[in-house]
Length: 160
Ligand code: ZN
Image (cartoon, rainbow, N blue to C red; front, side, top):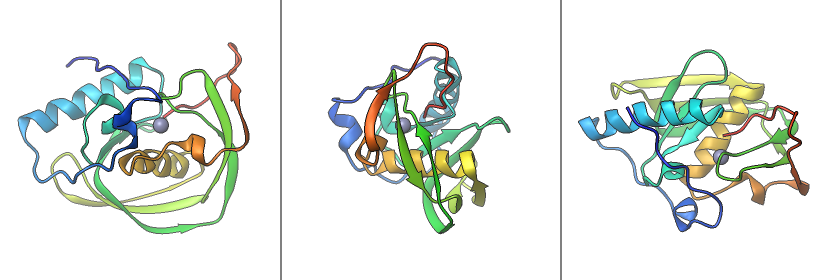
């Protein structure tokens, strides 16, 4: 496993639409392992492949329940609303308030290319939707209500 370089805002790769993953190759397995390691090293709760420069529809998430992978994810259902501060490993040192659904149900493939339905509320829903936005070249900064703020050194923001 190896750490990958996290691309930051201003890098064109973060504005592109990603392509579906067709099959799990050794390269994709390595990518998944590297992305999980990179996410942990950066203290993030999620990471999308374009954030490490790979234009594939693949994300990894761990909101404290263990890591999971979503390949070619598709939203099946959302409901409710939550407003809270969001951060992104590709926008270092910043945070901003974003409103998203409070619940999301997603259809995706796991690391064995098995179809899975993943449900989440609150932080998990927020992380899934934030990471899925990356696959369409969207950053949370476009959705921020009010101003993008600097993260204070002591505060703990969740970043994806
Ligand atoms: Zn992000």
